[in-house]
Length: 70
Image (cartoon, rainbow, N blue to C red):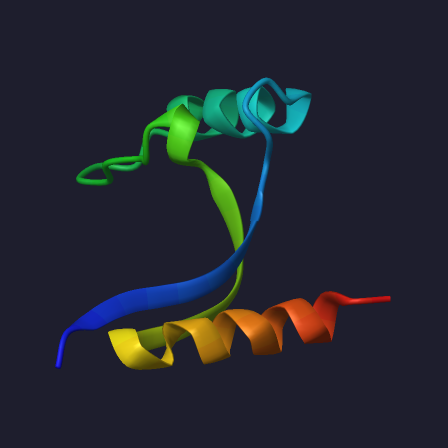
């Protein structure tokens, strides 16, 4: 069985002001040893689910979609 590291997140959008502001903030923080994510991969993680078996991914996606409906 294959497993995939899974999380629920909000995409900031490809050209959003939020993405560019977050990237600029990260660059301005002088934290030794920290490697920030590339701006194009920035997102807001709502829940980390850990390693999920690939056969369960469709069920997890449906549950998240149902939870976000309405």
